Image 1 (cartoon, rainbow, N blue to C red):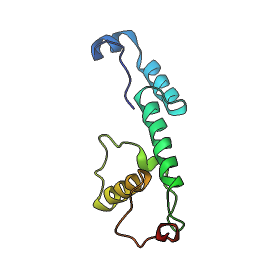
Image 2 (image 1 turned 180 degrees about the vertical axis):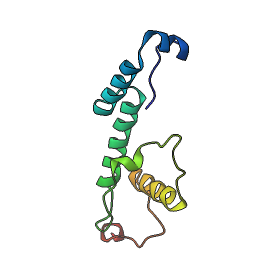
Image 3 (image 1 turned 180 degrees about the horizontal axis):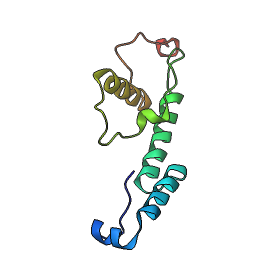
Image 4 (image 1 turned 120 degrees about the horizontal axis):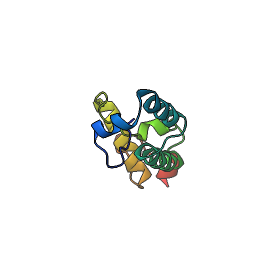
Length: 107
């Protein structure tokens, strides 16, 4: 979680806020996300909804967390990247050509 500094430098922030207050804001952000985290969450909910409404009968439901950006965290593996790309493709009306067509796709 990053704290929006409101135009202040890190040193100015440290002069104006105690570490206790900064920790309180960080705890609050865990309960009530704000800033870019909240925006990403909204987009992830939308993406998961689109992916889930377009998934095949035998496909597992996508999780919101699968669509949240992972800045500065562990690298995504090839399988995870392919899975996300497939969900996005299906969500945009395309077809995952690695799988057999479903009954609805056979026409």
